[in-house]
Length: 278
Image 1 (cartoon, rainbow, N blue to C red):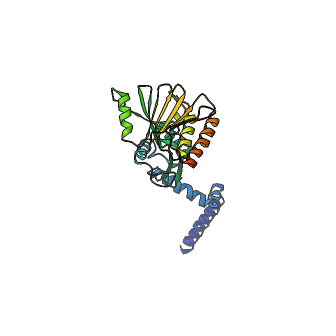
Image 2: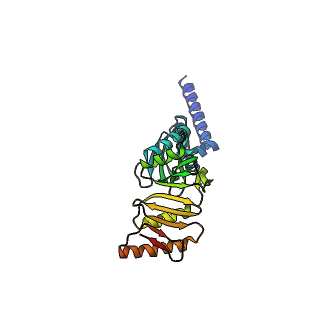
Image 3: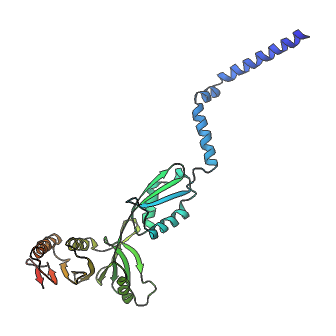
């Protein structure tokens, strides 16, 4: 009896050893053993997806200087992210596409840089347009513009007297007042709108400000630009003449005025010999 039991045990052990040996030589098993770390990683990754570890849960918003972004703009960005991004899979978020969407949907944004931090966080860096003008275009459009002429907000939408509302609005702000009945807005890239020929006007404003003048008002009428500083002094240019020539004239005249400590009320650089009035 003992011999029979021992023989059965040997047969069983031999069968088990044979099965293990056959299993160890089975190609799928051999492949798995050789790539075990990869299979473990895949299993863990699938479990992380199952438990939604990679779903976007948080974000930080800064401006390009590294400080927290403007509160109003941050709220607009947060509202957009909460509605369209939170809860989406980390790997399905395209940083470039999301940057374009934010710039297209929020007028204050010039461009956006987005970094994705493993496993579920975004860092949003904003480059923003700064408000510069309260602009009255014609008698029916009052808008907040950047120096680049980008429309940031529409103002006085509920007012029956837009002209009066616009002129009153600017009094309580640090912005300059811009008025023209000849210009209009044009659609540009990223879904934004910009004031026509604003690039030319911005260059005029920049050179006036470079001599220490804080701009309070800008008027455009019949292609003549009057830029008025906080002391009421007028710098006059023309959209019809060569801009580079006019800027060069202005620079020479202002340098002379500075050197001689002259007082003036108007500088008109539309002519070959600029006109300076006291």
